Figure 1: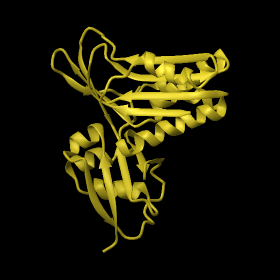
Figure 2: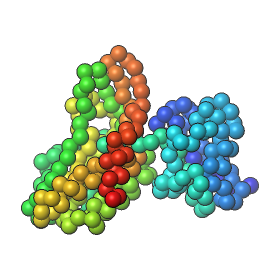
Figure 3: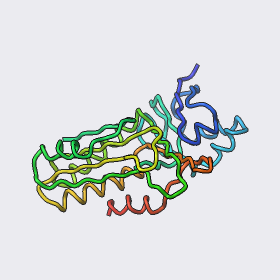
Length: 87
Length: 147
């Protein structure tokens, strides 16, 4: 079973994956964002290209910025996107 | 007063300025950002993270209200496909004094560019499409307010 985590993607991350969100299952929330990235990169192909280098990406847990070392904890949504370019 | 609006519709600079002015003070500063015509740009498409955008903009406005003596802050940001010359972003701040209004307006724009979850994709006149990359100068401008 595990606990579900919704992952949402934006900008070129979304375009290159071809999906804007998906749900994965975690053991207990004791995982970090980096653990989730490693899991995604392990799928190969576009996933490996995009998630192998976290320096090009930014993260938010339940709409607050997080770092690769941040614990998923009780968060229900992880957002993965490029550095922002609004304004 | 904090007023945040995010959506595809255009904004009325005069009307938004009057709303801020109506909150008192007498010193109103504003900034308008538009799609820049560099001679080769066709359209700019703005994507955002709806669940996070409002929260991020609200936090920036709250920081401005706590760091400067302001009566009102308005932030309007458009999303969707925009042609050259179109309005993108509007910030209006109102205070008793010019310095607070102008400085806080500048702070809000610097922070917005590096924190608010918006992404720009440009379509060139030759058909090329590319995502805009973050600029080091924007990061420096945002970080200087931490000092």
